[in-house]
Length: 153
Image (tube, rainbow, N blue to C red; front, top):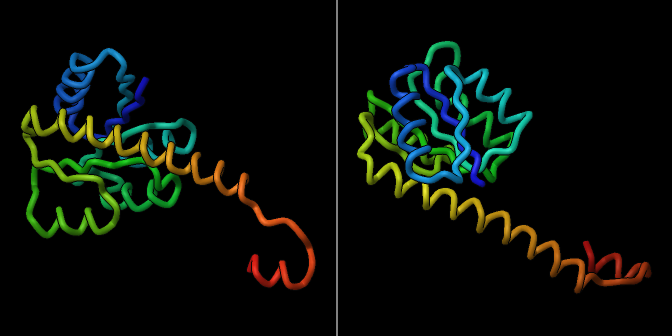
């Protein structure tokens, strides 16, 4: 089951995104919040596989939310959504670590494809991390001599 968080201040957009994602795949567990502060609190306390975040919001804008979440849990793909989109904002959010940028109103096919690709990306990231740990344990150098310690450093 994939857990998706929608951070969007407009209730109508939240409802549409929630409905689209819920109807697309019954394995999506979708949560929603109306501002960035609540969204960050949810991310701190729960594990999400994907976040859809509006850019223009009161209290804390989407760029600040993106920056905070990337510090907390960098493995979560974040798709930025904006109705006031311009190329500079899109490029800036991507440089800060956003997975993708979608303009409002979102094109249904583009949104669903982006969600699928982002979820696959998260799964690959987690699997890669797990395999690296497994390989690292299997081929760990042993010994405590000064020469071995120097090589390990």
